[in-house]
Amino acid sequence: MIVARSKPFPPDVHFIGVGGSGTSGLAQILRSRGIRVTGSDRTRESLGPLLEAGISVELGHRPENLGLPVRLVVHSAAIPETNPELRESRRRGLHVLKYAQCLGKLLDGHHGIAISGTHGKTSTGAMLTSVWLEAGRDPTVLLGGHCSVLGGNWRDGAGGDFIVEACEYDRSFLHLRPRAAIVTNLELDHPDVYSDLGEVQESFRQFLANIPEDGPIIVGADDPSTLSFHTALGRRVTTYGFEDGVEWQAQVRDLGERSRFLVVREGRPWREFELGVAGVHNIANALGVIALADHFGVDIGAVESGLAEFRGVDRRFQHRGRRDGVDWVDDFAHHPTEIQAAIETARVVYRGRPIRVAFQPHQYGRLQSFGPAFAAELARADSVALLPVYSVREKVGPESGALLDRFAEELRRLGTPVECFEDFDDAERRLLPMLHPDEVVVACGAGDLHLFTDRILRGVAEPRG
Image 1 (cartoon, one colour):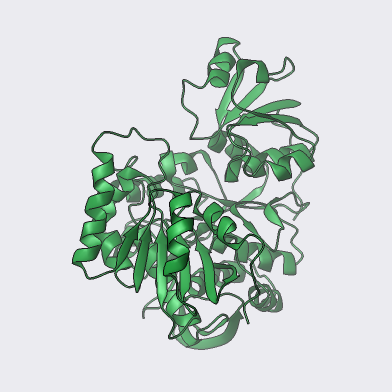
Image 2: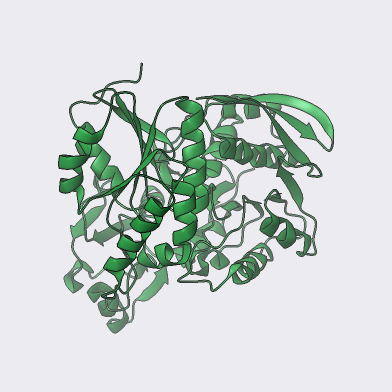
């Protein structure tokens, strides 16, 4: 299906915070469609692909970054109203949109397929992209992380489908009106936005109400909160998971760096699949993709090859290299459930080897809300290296420093050896001598912890043997 593209955007668009995972991809899609795009960001990280695409990017936020031809200004959710470029935009009466509002306008011209849920959005979206490309559907894609199948996080396809992540943070996904959706799972993940799980469920209910009645909704139904949520929706959904009673069930056959599983469809064994990445959670992600592909009549051979050839997403249990016999893995895990999945996957892939988690908590508010759960999951590791909190978009009070100390004490109370580090310099100096050959370090966090792994492995990384 080819969709005739409308032109809902003016010829000149400026992005504030253009280096973000979502904004950078959206900026490049607009640039590929002939729109003159400029941008600004406070750091150089992630700006390389934008500059290579011919997008003019200024470092730092200043009113003069807004050129005279600019008619539309787009800003990420992380940009406060006090930002000088945002204030100048409003002073000049320019049209201003949040990233999600701009994405919603772009999505309206396509057959939108939204990947939503608390965990697994990027991996599921990347798997779906791999399958859709194998099937020749030529989708437009915008994801929250760099994946090998795209060589980045975006794609401007000629087909009608638009595969996009739909994030519940700031209720931003309410600006999207997709035609189909996968909901991977539901948990409270943003305590600065939602007071409890009930508010999260209500927000997802509003989001799914934007999908036409004949549009498929594919829901992971293993955890109780998602199960109770989808039964209360009042409309037809397709369920998947590992438990009995779902329409699409996975039975694990083999786990390792690659996974094999049998799909049981409506209670009957159907077909066996191989997945090119590790982790039971990724089998669940693949199952949602299989169910959606079946709804759209995608060739089963394309589904099989798309999943088998899938090589994952950066910072999603990504093996980065080896130094002095120690394997280093990056993972975006910043919620207790994600920490659990990362450690369980490490136990499978690196059987019998000691697992040390280098943990950089993401936001003081999240650590405050989920501290005991974080400690319980980290206790599954053999030891923990605790880095300072990566804090953005929140007010930090004088008591915040003590929060990390109390968290470390809770880990020790649970019997988990933990070493605290003041910063990356301190960790580089003291952590390396602590490591033993054959140990595995899983660096978990959604902040800039991957830059620490870069420092450790710069010039010394070895392929895993």
